[in-house]
Length: 561
Image 1: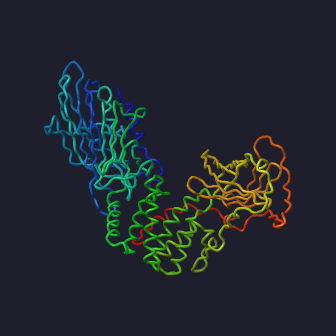
Image 2 (image 1 turned 180 degrees about the vertical axis):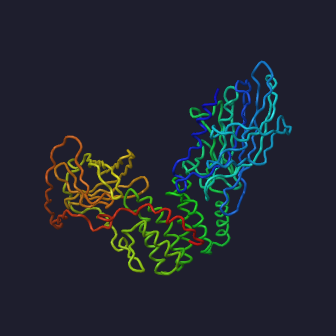
Image 3 (image 1 turned 45 degrees about the vertical axis):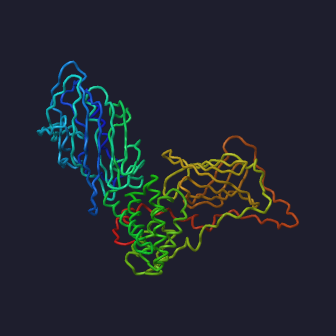
């Protein structure tokens, strides 16, 4: 009846994307599950269910943790005759690598009385082409009477530390008659729950927390009513993506340490590192709100650590590691960020304090891989051209009479496809308003659009200066010369390639007159035109951003920093 739908949705549930560590999905332990009827045409309905996944406080280093599941089901026979059947419950599943782990400590009660079960083979809930062990137990359902089924068992976490995941399959309940009347699912942690330790709105590679839950105290709750588990209803199956309890307990321990000893710089450093290790993922970083909070907390803890231990090279290097890794991903499709320069400053300080420290040297090498134009090896040391030659900031509020009428400049300008320094291609669309507003849209070949907004200014030097910022607070600056209906960039980030940036006005427009130098007032000097040339900024003409060296710079296990 519903078998084919169940097969398809379970296959979809466990088809993990390539974002997992090293692009390989981890072995997955058996999920929790609703009981399944033995009769396909049953008239017994699952009126309600209440499921509690209680995560255990496992503090073993690197552990993925475990959870005790207790689930209660209220069943009602809506038919005209009594039904007796063998209800079944999955015990095992293929972990994706042809091993068959089982759930542990299964206990089953019917109407409050403990019942025994027998093992029987039925198709794997994930891979229907093979049989695995199920628990099977006999239940009689009188007409129009409620029968309670209670199950309890232990699940093991799945994934890669410092993250873990638990799963619960609602779809096995789809075989009962009609819809499921209501379902209450609760995830309980052994400490206060928060968006920092429950990963929301972000795929960790092998799991993504089911949306729609609410956090209260140590718990997160979901409630569903009158639904048929499946891809076209409110929910298919439940997933819970978490920071592994062992990793979060490290955070709690270090929070307690700095609370007791607020002047202990080492404690602040350890706390900063603990935050950092659960902020970064195998590729990039957590983009959820809780992840952003962790980043800010890590920065704050490093700052407190270094205020107390300003001569500690390893903590300077550890701070540089945090800033550089974040900046690498933030600047991958744009210009280096403020964190980039701060990371270079921190690692430069660390090298000055302890040039031969192995941890400092390792982190320095990793950062030089990420920003080869900003940190260059020179013999046994490094040069920092971006710290010596930082981008020239835009001029202050102009005191020179503007050259252009804003109504003449205003309009939409568009480039051809530009080949970026990382060999990807994008098309830029720049909209300039008469109110000096500016919007820059970057559209890649994959149709992904990044929109930045800011302002444009006319400083009386014959150039149009544009400064915009994207949703991730990355700033990009241009200077254009305006000729007829064309904007030609004289200053621009090097990421847009050596060919330069040229943009033509979109639509029909009258020709733009050549700018005329304004007549200086008696107390103003005559403005000197700026020559049209590329800037000396390290952004322009530099090599492409560093290749993806994540495995090299993220695998290193450091005891400190």
